[in-house]
Structures are given as structure tokens and as C-alpha cells.
Length: 137
Image (cartoon, rainbow, N blue to C red; front, side, top):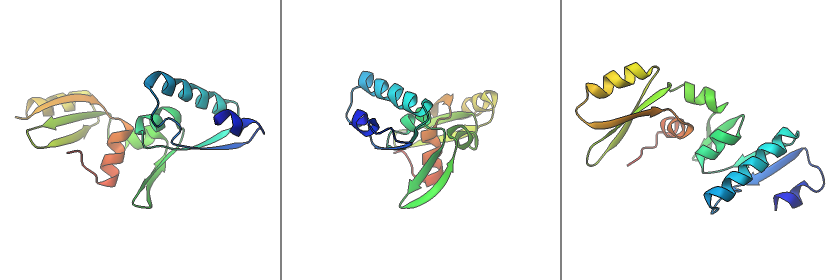
């Protein structure tokens, strides 16, 4: 389908959920193809529910929640607005994520907290959940 869309040499290509249902190996091949198409000068407008896909492929993203644009910008700038490090805290019924500018701050927080938790880098999915007010349960 992508090849057919490129036959007339467009400047703009719209892709709606291009990797839904694909296995990881094929999905990564499609990602490489999309990157190549974009590097060749074609603007790619991509809609996806796979936020890690947008983080990898996009130079600019926009979050739409309940029909409203919540934010737009580069994935890195949107992630940086939260911090660099995330601490995920867990108990039997809940999951909570806190954000920190420095790994040392995240480490100190997790050591001072009684709940089980882990430290990781902030990702674009964190930004989506934080900016839309949605929670992981």
C-alpha cells in the first residue's frame, strides 16, 4: 500500500496506523521505510496509537485527547517538560509515576519511599499520560 501511494512522487504522505497488527520484525522494517521516505524529502503525516512509534519516527508530534489538541512539539521537548527520569511506584492496586530532572533525585526518592518501585528514562508515553490526565491502572 505504501509503494502504491509513492508511485506519483508525492510531497506529502498520510499514513493511518501503518503498523497495526504487524510482528516486531516487519514493524521495524516499515519504520525504516518511513524514515527513508522522510529523508528523501517527503513529509509523512502519521497517525498512531503506538506512542513509541511516534517517539522514534516523528520530528514533531501532537497529542489529541477527546478531540482537542493537548500539546505539540518535538518528542524530546515534550518529554523534557516532565524531566529526564521517571520513578514507577507500585502497590497491590495502584501504579504512580513521578518525574525528576536528575537520576540522583529519582534514586533518593525511591530509597525514601516504602512502596516498591523502579527508575527509568522518561518516554513519550509518560508525556501523553501526564498531559491528558489519563492514568495507568
